[in-house]
Length: 284
Ligand code: AMP
Ligand code: ZN
Ligand code: FE
Ligand code: FE
Picture 1 (cartoon, helix red, strand yellow):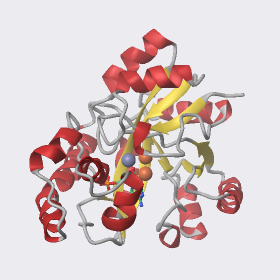
Picture 2 (cartoon, helix red, strand yellow):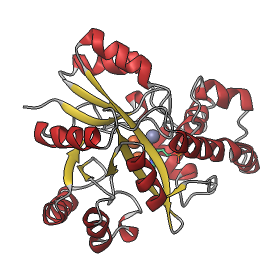
Picture 3 (cartoon, protein in one colour):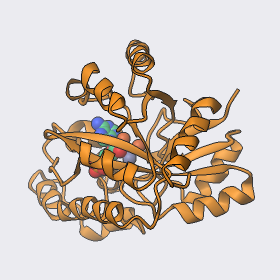
């Protein structure tokens, strides 16, 4: 039984546990290793690593990078990139700016739909996060009594095909793969066949990214994938020699059915990720 959960979020993006609380909850859940993969930011790394040392939980330096593939949103997990890499840092800053720039338009649309959200209510939920996301809007809508929970906020208003959705800048996927590797990191496509991204990431394309050594792994075990999808992705990853990861995508109270450790990754895959990161001059 391995306790390796490679994809979690804290309040530094849209999770509800601070990095320290996340580590404490990981320890309480019996996890040995967690990957902290906040959206488009590394600001939670230091606190989580310090808390991890005290709690006996190994914290991996991760990022969930917002990417674009021909107009479709794709999430890329980056592991072990150098914090000082200026090019990657600049690109993450562009993604965060894109997140902030859409806020006024989203607030205006909410008001047009009879759901006014005062800016200060939204920003109370954003808190210290440098990476404002739709879940913060959802939490503000819950507080104002417009919806019962994040799930309903997305289903009725915020999801990509719903009225409040506003597109934002995200890094071109292949540019992101190259930036992450140049920064010493390993690359794993997050939940590739969850929600709406499956059509954009067909088997042949994913296999070609692995064959060209730009992509290291595929997140197969994720709760946005049903059993059939996992079986198909596992077969693809095995044939393509991609590393297979599993993770919870834990967001604290913000995402139901994504409990810490609900999916895990093998020690062999973690060792291989670590080997590749070290070979590239990164730090996991
Ligand atoms: P954003 O970063 O603003 O694009 O929001 C994306 C985040 O919102 C994801 O990382 C998930 O945490 C959450 N999310 C996106 N789509 C949905 C959905 N349909 N239902 C629930 N949560 C979602
Ligand atoms: Zn999220
Ligand atoms: Fe994601
Ligand atoms: Fe995530």
